[in-house]
Image (cartoon, helix red, strand yellow):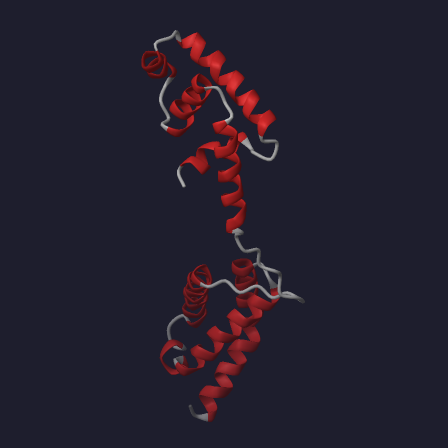
Amino acid sequence: MNADLEREYSEFVEARSHALFRTALALTGHRQQAEDLLQTVLTRGVRHWARIRATAPEAYLRTALYREYTSWWRRLRRAREVSAEQVPEVATADGTTAVDLRLALRAALARLAPKHRAVLVLRYFEDRPDSEIAEVLGCAESTVRSQAARALARLRDLCSKLDIVHLKETAGR
């Protein structure tokens, strides 16, 4: 780039950089990111100044701001980097908890009455509706509901560390 074009570009940047910066700030929402965005676009714009100076250089650079910002957030969506003073500890899954829960469930189920055990197995492990359970066990639906409530109460007593919410999850393992 010759000296005249360079001087002309510098004058343009000096005159219009505040307006372009406001656009970059509106896009990013952060001063430092807006500065980086504007600097990136202005650095690329200098290469094309000879071509864009005769038409609408500010419109060209605004379009470049939008496009560059779009490419930034597309990249950020793929790999987001967060700075922190200390690296956070990463919790790892403890497989022994699931095993302990399953063993406790089996022991507690073994101590239930056969009809209670059957109702719980059909309802929670096989995910059957009360009407089917009643048909299989040869009793009324209301009996199924009352037996299930009693069985769950007994199960809670037998196994205090067993969370009934996890009953279904444990069954699938």
